[in-house]
Image (cartoon, rainbow, N blue to C red; front, side, top):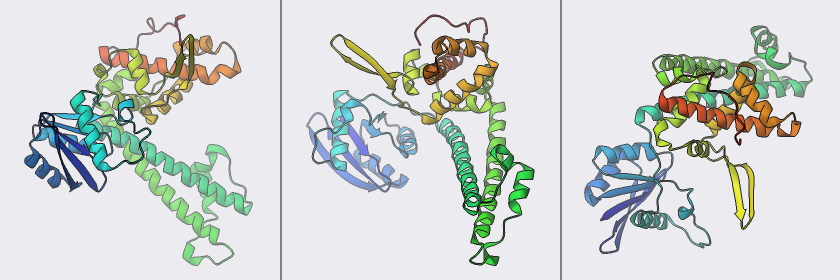
Length: 351
């Protein structure tokens, strides 16, 4: 069997053609271009293509599938892939190890969404990126006024129409500023970028809202009291195909919401959550869990039961509620059933 293992890189990729019958290897370095990969596949004619997950895995995987090759995408964070106690490591070593692990059947395959699903997920992530940029500029604007000792409206009132008008009274084109008021020019540039980012964010929201109208899974999750469109979008694009998870523990581990386990002999200690997987999904679930306390009776009862009225258990309770919310969303998507308040009753099961 010929296995083509590719160590993907931003500029260059190293391939290793491993023949399991003769135990021979053939290495080749190519540029990270589509035409280079097409030529590599035509020359090697492998029976299996193996690669690791990275930012370019999506289009390389799609190219190999289009050419009719069987593709296996590996998770580089699994234990078998670790390079412990190794003094030297090269791209050739990575490619060779990837090929040998595939030959031994020691690679856990990673799910690769469809190109359309990846585009949808990327737009949802980009919205979060733009929000971070808006927050960063808002913090910079506040810092400019703090450095000058000028008082501005506090909280969200700063970014209302009246608040922006008050801030704009201090702005001035940078070319018209002298050494005594350069900060006014900086303020003008920051407010200009803030206006552009708000326009970008509004454009993204309009597109996502249109997509949500035709996405039944998003509408299904919105039947949960306290879960809005944005939270539903994040859950849908991250889980994608709910049937790829066999049980609730797998979907919880995918979001990094299960505790770390340290077991030795009679000792079995559970630590903090692993935080593996999508940070976007985990953050959205925690934020939704806090909001659901006001709108969802099941969430409020579950939180109160786990928290037990102790202030030190608030974070633990909200994390557990986020995990339970994810499991219920997964079950709703898997069985295509809307939220049922009668079934959403808190139980005495472990959290």
